[in-house]
Length: 74
Image (cartoon, rainbow, N blue to C red):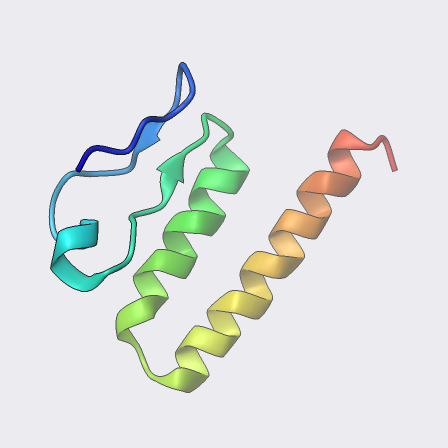
């Protein structure tokens, strides 16, 4: 089964981590370096301990909030 992405977007890779491998989709490529790095960080933490996953989630949340603030001019 192939996922359709809007024009200019695609999956980060076609290697391990595909839906048929572990049930999770890889992080999409958005074209925004800040967002792509945050999503890659979160994806990379999935094989770590629960504490590592929580820390990564908190870090990514802060990065995304900062990016949204940048977009909102605030």
